[in-house]
Length: 331
Image (cartoon, rainbow, N blue to C red):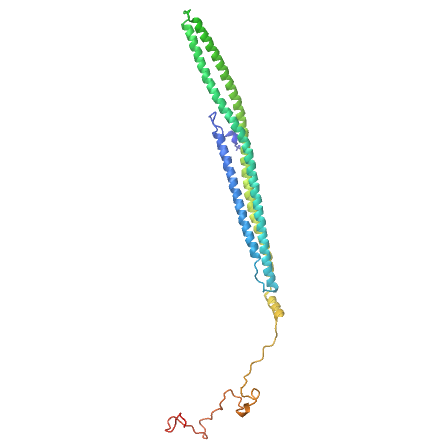
């Protein structure tokens, strides 16, 4: 299948029209707008990465695990260190995105300048072509009118050939009409020639402009394609880099030994291997505690009263509530 080109598909039948050219210009303007939109997207994405990176860096500086020790402390320190590194890589990613956005902006401005130069020349030629076309039409109308005037003068001469009184005057008018017609013919031919020259120049310039604009369209598509490709590659690389940094945390956590940390803590902070002695009961009235205790009782029992005699023995007689003489009131 043959490759189609702008210069073969954007003409129109109107000699002063610019429909095909206008369609190409609109297409280039739309493409430039797309470049601008992608550029703004890249800048916004860079701002997000920049904020995310700064938040990560701030988070990595927060204190936690300060009281931990040994292998777990090393793992937590490694975790914070790698989060800091991830934040740094996101900062670099944000800068890379801004660089890509700047490249796209520069590309867009270069295309704009190149397009302006071609547009300026094309607009100038188009104005010349339209002006010359109008001149040609006016000169054609004047030429046709002069030819009609000449024919009418010749007819008057022929009709009044026997009128000797006016024949000289009619001949003079006919001669003047012929001269006017010849001059109009010369101007008309000159304008047609000039229009043909301008038209040929415009045709060549239009074809050249189409080639330039087609090349710009190809370059724009290729640039946008490469920009997005680079962008997603940067994001993929960021994922790979982050995973490598997080792998360091996983390796550190693999080295985190629970038993070793417990033993490390024990050896570092141990306070003794014997429990405290039991707390014994000390009787307030014991000789060891009170030097006057022997005057009252030497009983080691916790109860300050002596043990009551067994009610079942014959040596002790107890009163009962049923006895008539029993009373709580002592006299």
